[in-house]
Length: 172
Image (cartoon, rainbow, N blue to C red; front, side, top):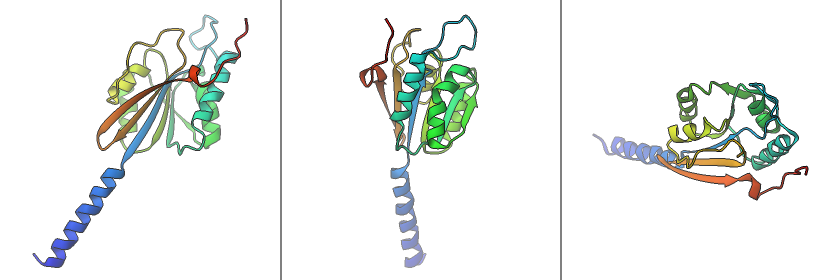
């Protein structure tokens, strides 16, 4: 093999390797915001829920969001609607009974993803992505925000609490 061909192969390998190092995904997952207790299967957000959704949209300000995923429930769609408007992205719906399909979509390419789900699906999604879900999300817990950073095949899980960053205007 000629020296030029050998050198070219080495350079291509080094160049490809550098792209691997830069490859990274960030995935933010959270339960929908506070929902009305109206006895239906598909309640809307409360006023506090709308406030939390607005706060969440600020979390993603100046971030290059690749895709926004939501289950097809009013409360999850309302939670990510402001983020979608701010980024100009269309919310992509997923079936919460088929989380493996959502994980496959996210794992197809590197990017910055936002996922809204439910107390019984978000921890499972975190785990399917290779993260650490921690304890179960209680029925009255709406402020857990998971941040999964995937770089070079390593996954780091951070859990944030939105209540540490803003105060809801709760009525007495």
